[in-house]
Length: 259
Image (cartoon, rainbow, N blue to C red; front, side, top):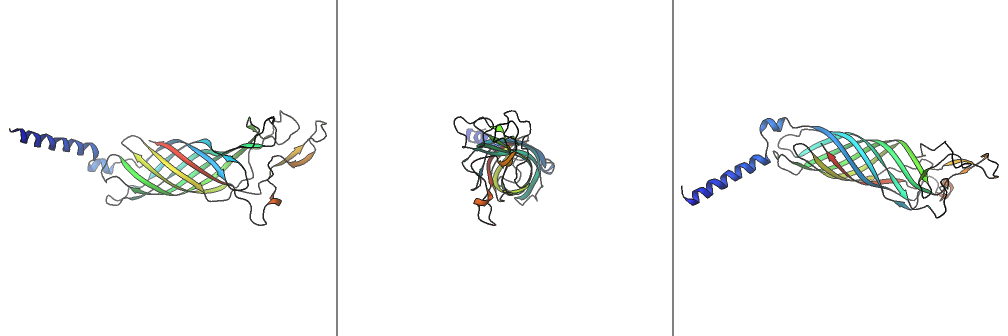
């Protein structure tokens, strides 16, 4: 066999191997997994005029996803699931000399259960082993717990300022329980794992008459007897325009491994 023929056969063999490495058979295509797990972390913060000096913080998430098996010739699909997520924001309000019960808030943490409702658009070829897709849609959330931290040490805010050792803590802030966020992202998944990157922006004002009040010991007799707002800067609704509560929104940039 001539050299040119050897080269031609070798090239055809390499193309055949490459094609087999990138594509799946009919049986594999029909049997592709339509569900999996997600583990990730994100950069989160808040925006709006109600809470001042927000700064990003790191949050975490875990959940599972499931997606439709679109028609072979259609790149469109749908993905949903259920996520447990911790998000929130840091705040640059702590000052030198603040105590662990100082009223300057420095962090808010929100724990939520979220249901993403995403339309997907496949970028990869129909039978590629690595599926690449764009995603866009809404993420519905239920904020089942929220905590405010005060002072530079980020100590949970107590309901009473009479002692450094108060055991009663705020564990549900006056924010709305239901939330929804617009989300856009990119996901790629191989035969066993992949990753996703997404940007989320809160669309709902979570301000639910956001005032945190508690008892304060003003006469230093060891007994908290005066009720007043517990945090500063002020969040008094009287400073807001009637019928237009100041915004408390959330945003995040999230990276997750998908299995």
